[in-house]
Image (cartoon, rainbow, N blue to C red; front, side, top):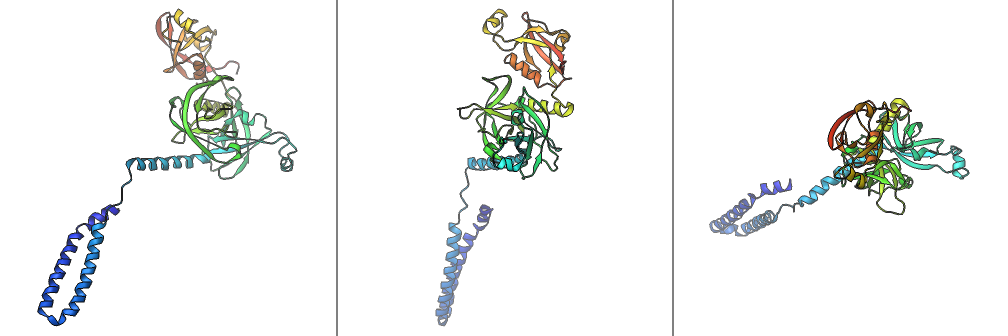
Length: 386
């Protein structure tokens, strides 16, 4: 706006020059014609010259403001976008106080005459009060209190959990809630920017940021499921809080960190969290999907025997009679290479893909059998034991 104003004033430079020149000429003519007015005109000419000179100097020296580098403008836009996303996401994050037996009495809690409550975080996932967190946050609790970002506190009802995936579902009776949106964790890539939001050490609404450091991680004590690895700071109390992308969507549930390390945290992928939540909400419990095979990992020696180019995929050791895999035509010694279009890194990868699949869905698998590539369709069913 300022630059446009300066552009409009530029023609005034020449007008100022013209006024100054005309004023001087008029003054000389009048003084020559009317000598008695010499003193008055001297004063008028001086005032005119002074005013015109100041105007010329001001207009001449006016310059447009120095433009910010494009990189600075981009950073400002990025900063505004990040703060907007966090402001919109924080109302979806809750603080969880897990109360062991005997700590519901405020006086007992104040005088520490009973076990102290533990703190955790969670994420609202529906407008009618459902929220998800880690099971270990509430595993030892007899009751739980939920505090929203606006300060409201509600008692929580335990709806269900899946211990193996460490995901629990709670519910509060509250209105005007802001649920978070699930993202497809299959699209998460190493290097993308993420934010961890929660209540570490009792500090409300704490936000840290980093990147996805790795996908498909398995820790030393946990080989039954995969995690996202992130360098976004995760501290005690962050457990169960959301790991979100730059759009504020939930891509993972913050789970744990590696002790005596910096920048190594893990989160449960959102697709598994969503499967557990939807199953518990609909059926009251987590219904495991059933595929129907037992698998072996592919070692370099097995890969050579089967004439495979690498150790990727899952080797079928046994097919359960009457299972979906058996009816689809899967056989022992088949190597399953991909599941629903996704290449498998190993047998655990296949197990995790199955765990994220809703019963009733038909999936397509690519297999290698005696040197030939085949494609089969397998209808995923409900686990018989369920």
